[in-house]
Image 1 (cartoon, rainbow, N blue to C red):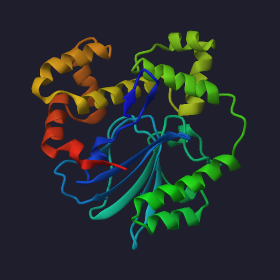
Image 2: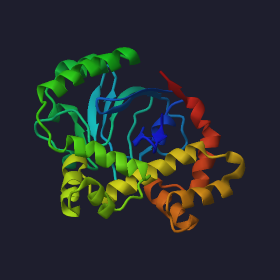
Image 3: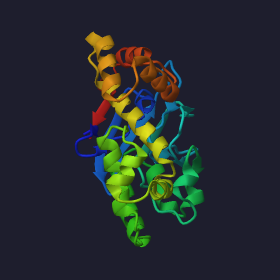
Length: 282
């Protein structure tokens, strides 16, 4: 499952991470606040820069290297940001669903927006760091992380009055493909627009309009990955209409702003690199 607007769920995408390797392993979870796990070996063969694009999510990324291992907690970016993946290194990562992450004592979701922070600064768990960075076994890394993560959730479990509302709001935004207005969210939730804004800031670290923009972009990205290569022009026009853009030029501008590439060039890149063949579902 990638983008299921009907059921209000989606798997956030970072296409340039996939392009960093000829084999990108992905294991979907879609439970416990986790979207999926992924791993890849950066072969350094891609003739384009590797960027993180906006997705509204938090990643934890481990560089599994004997000599210089590290782990970073990466909040969503709001515009494309260059990522320094070292060549000939193995990476393991976990991507959380919007509004979710490991429970940290000294960090809120808003603290991580456009930030990359060493995991050790937020979480005192040397065992987690050492066991994951010393292994290249994807399934072992996933299981070890899940065991630690579920204990982390239980340890810091407190009553969150926003939790049910958080899932409701995410579902509404995804169902609308990012097009819903704040006033409609307020009406659907039974709260004021101001209170909805507070919930978004507390749970996602973002204003509602910004979060909606990122979800619409992710939906656009998903559709670009699935588009019919034989009829690009027509599909782009239809896609612009479906996602509520004023016209195709508005969609192109938005896509370029959030990905640093035009839709046409992006489609060419997907075809040239055989994007889908690189993804190995586990």
